Image (cartoon, rainbow, N blue to C red):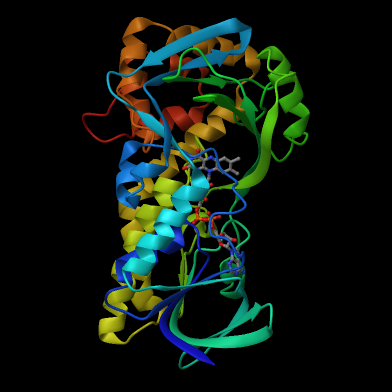
Length: 396
Ligand SMILES: Cc1cc2nc3c(=O)[nH]c(=O)nc-3n(C[C@H](O)[C@H](O)[C@H](O)COP(=O)(O)OP(=O)(O)OC[C@H]3O[C@@H](n4cnc5c(N)ncnc54)[C@H](O)[C@@H]3O)c2cc1C
């Protein structure tokens, strides 16, 4: 029997951010089922410079980007070029290792090769785990589920799972793009139904991938035609990765002696699928709640509910809006999307888009709609209703 104040399940960025934040004030252990932190990679590694600062991971940056070419059906290309660096690409495995080192520096114990199976909640939480030698238990005051989209912790707590998923596949290809500071996004049902595809320059290598809704064919079906369209089908392939992105957060992200954070809580951005920023912000909220509960020695569901209030206050509006816009996006036919592309290609609209922040893409919607109200003609009624309810200043 091992003991700690907080047991974090999952050694990804969300779990490690939590562990870093509490490490100096509590005894925290992070169990990670894989032997190597950061492996296998299931990510593009596209984040804002803000995220790199949050993780102290400057050394993991592979490339810096100013903007992108958004390719709509009908060959309409919308160029959005920011005045400053809008995003960076990180080496995701190295990024995760940096997060782990920070957690250990803060005093957290990291236990690779340990897998959580389930837990019994009573006067304490007893977490059942496995490693290569067999099964054992942790006795802890709080279990923090940072165990990704399949979260065993959320299941154990009866919190259910995310509302929806998209499936993704990505290939790193030996090829140098001429323009290194612009990515490309490809939209449309024939390219990436229900989501989008991307091409991201990373020096001598180019990252090409896509995600698609679960109701369509596997994403690999669309990758071949995309590579052909980009003229990259015969280039050397360095690695292929695949994975799932949860869309839509859990209705409840806490239970007695349990919190769930990051992908385990479905806290990804519904428009881009990015989950590093949101997971790390939620981890900070969870840490504040956990330390407060430790001080009061109260880990009841009621005491832990302040975590949900905290992350909803920081991320809730963006995630809710993103979900609504995504719903409208998935309903658009390629013909309507072509029209959207025509409207967005106007210079005044592109200027608004260039101000955008990829950590809060949905925040841009009211400004874009104010500049191009014609877009609302193409939107379903629920979206029109959403944005006519926007707060003063954002009204269209
Ligand atoms: C194709 C693709 C591309 C993406 N691109 C981006 C991007 O460019 N930018 C971005 O911000 N996000 C991106 N994402 C999403 C991003 O990868 C996730 O949102 C992010 O990894 C979430 O971090 P996390 O710490 O919550 O979970 P994870 O990173 O999934 O970490 C969970 C950890 O828990 C461990 N674990 C699971 N179960 C157990 C268990 N029972 N016991 C012990 N350990 C366990 C896992 O091994 C894993 O290490 C992408 C996702 C995919 C699939």
